[in-house]
Length: 476
Ligand SMILES: NC(=O)c1ccc[n+]([C@@H]2O[C@H](COP(=O)([O-])OP(=O)(O)OC[C@H]3O[C@@H](n4cnc5c(N)ncnc54)[C@H](O)[C@@H]3O)[C@@H](O)[C@H]2O)c1
Image (cartoon, rainbow, N blue to C red; front, side):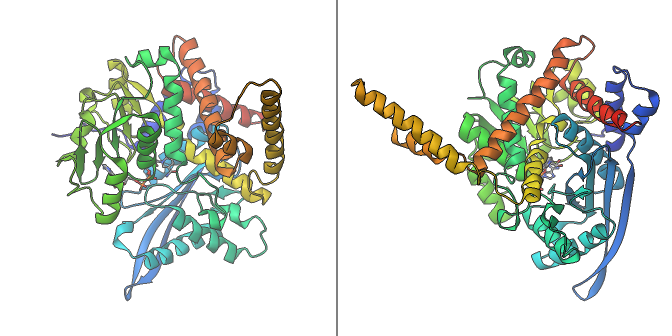
């Protein structure tokens, strides 16, 4: 079936922006300043591989420098284009403003199929790409700080950090030039899981509000909710794993590039991931039905749809047939502008990307702060916390003994309480707090303003107001 022609990803983001600013009181000049992408650097570089010179094309786009450094991931995919990178950079500006991380928006991309190259070759390519960006301050702890995105992970971030350190031997803050690093290379606990964890916290927050659940025709908690996930990569896998393991949701389908696995009683997410890691495909997985046309499963009856792969997967060609009453955009831009309108008219509730996947940049912010402060979270206060907890435990035990109450703390509770918070706990609590606060900010506008009909417009209004306030305070 042919899919109707739709605006590009970049245009789609602009149209969503326009829908929000039409409800705001911004001067046209400031509105335009916020909308436009400040700059995009295109680089073509050669690397000698397998006996010949291969040329690669990469981009680093800076959407807004109202705050610096600017922040945004680096994507490795054959589909990378300037349009895509600029759209993603714009979303980063709004996302950072919404979750109050003090960054402007940026994004990078390299046009490459990472699966075609060995690890050693990818390291050579990454180091060369990083060299080109570092030379132009497009990777720099004070100016532009990348992170992982589709097709990249901790591994690439470690290479980038090392490349920067080699080129800037006297920069004491070198490690803060990139986030999403392995912990042994200056990363932070909880960064790998952060975006999926944020999706879980966003859903938990949504389900805390009975009126919001009711808008999607849902009730109760996440337990037993049927979830369809598209993309079992970093974001989709962690979201699915936590929702099943900790909230007792049921993942009834996983859509990947080579088909979909369906099992109405619930898939074993861990087993599917293990299979994918081993075979580079979901095909052949024994405990589920394989559907060849994976994207048709986006239309499967379920309670929550989590697109966590790519932009533009819900479009004018399938929006009408999407049956999920609640969609949480774990990926960036999975719903086109046109599809967004169709879904809104149908009453589908959409938790928008700029909020839903903000867990990554939130924990990246914690990592950046950790690198600049040169100390692990929890290191200074852990013993003090432990001493205070011990006082409470001793007092409880004394009271119980004095009054013959026979109280006894469960040993595992006592052990945890006495241990104090470690870095992972601090990161998770900071992320949870951030996701709750940002949801409240969107929700207030969603419910208070009769002209705001969905969470996406509310999110844009919060974000744009904050960016505008920063520009105004600079005298613009
Ligand atoms: N990694 C992060 O911290 C982060 C943060 C914010 C937003 N995001 C967004 O989340 C999305 C996924 O990123 P990721 O880091 O998980 O990437 P990833 O590369 O780890 O995983 C992507 C997964 O999607 C699958 N996939 C690709 N195209 C597909 C298709 N057409 N249909 C079904 N499956 C497909 C891939 O096989 C892979 O398993 C992207 O939109 C990215 O911009 C990622």
